[in-house]
Image (cartoon, rainbow, N blue to C red; front, top):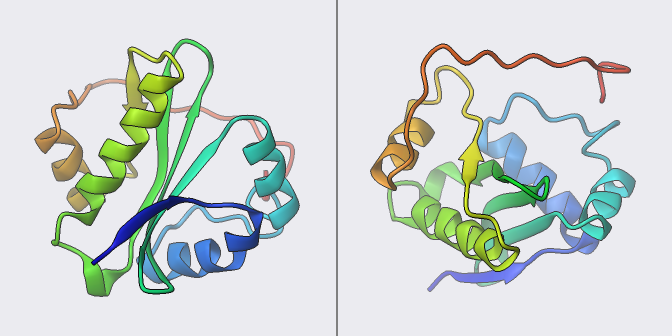
Length: 143
């Protein structure tokens, strides 16, 4: 039986390994996803929720907010454990954490081509918005 728990800096290596196994494309292990940056993000209010089976991390999601909107980021499930409801369980845990922080609006970015995540969020009642562009300005490729 898989169990949810809050993750810490000590879980960083397992989180990176899971993100890589799950095929996340935007991982920056030498920059924003380094252990030191991850620990700063946790200290700043980011919530990392893991799903474990035994001592194996099989799912992870990050929940953050900007005081007006909650964000669900970096949802990943080990490919061997997909289609068992674990993604839904993690999204719901992130939503609960964000609601506890006072967020009434929750959003997620989903990379183009990630149809499984898009389907999951639509199933959970998220609206898909057309004609919204994501722009960013980075200090470096690792930012």
